Image 1 (cartoon, rainbow, N blue to C red):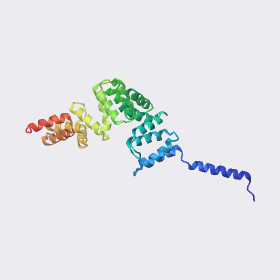
Image 2: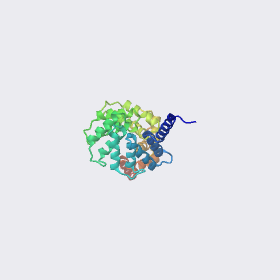
Image 3: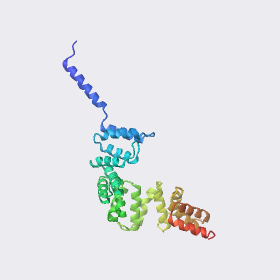
Length: 289
C-alpha cells in the first residue's frame, strides 16, 4: 500500500520538531551551569561552558554568573575586564544582580576608573528592583560617605529595605543607627529588638553587639546577654571576648574570675582589638590587681 504524500510531510515536521526540542534552551543551559557550579562536586569549568552558551543567546543570568566566574577565577582564568564585560551585558538588560556587581567594581575601580557617584547610581537601580545586597551596599556608601556626601537618613532607608529581606549586615547597621540616633530618631528599644531574633538564631555579630549594649546599661535580660556573650566569645568574636573578660575581671554581673577574664582579654588583644591591647598591657604590668 502506498503512503499518502501528506504523511511524508508530517513525518518531516515531526523530525524537525524533535531536533528543535533536542537543542537546550538558554534557560536550560543556564540551569545546567548552575547545577555544575553548585553540585557537591562542583565543576566550574563545565558551569562556565554552559553559561557561555546561554550568554551567547543574551541570557542575563548567564552573563552575570559567567562574570562572577571570571571575577573569582573559577573554571576560567581570573579576568576582571572579562567579568566587567559580562556584568555590563546583563546590566544593559536591567538585571539587578549584575547592576550590583558592576556597581561594586566601579566603586573600587576594578577594571575601570573608580567612580563612587556612578557606582551609587548602579546600586540604587539594583536596590529599587529589590536586590537586598545592593540596598545594603548603597546604605553603607551613604552611611560612610564613601566618595559621596554622607547621608545617614538615606542610609537608614536602604538598610531598612535590606533588613526587611533579612540581610544580616544591614540589620546590624540599622540597629546601630537606631541606637546612636543617626539618620533616625534614637530608639534603643528598637535597636535591641532588631538584633534579638538574629542573636537567637546564632548570628555572632548580633550576639556580640547585644552583649556590648548590655554592658553599657541596655535593658536586656541578664541571662540572655551573658549567653550571647559566651556564644560570641566561643565563636572568636574579639569584642565579645573583651566585654565578657571585663565582666569577669570586675566581678560585675557575674562571679569574679580574674584568670579567665584576663585570658579572654588576651585573646581579644591577640585578634588586634585596640581596647583589649591596652587593657592586656595594663594587666601584664600589674598582674596582682
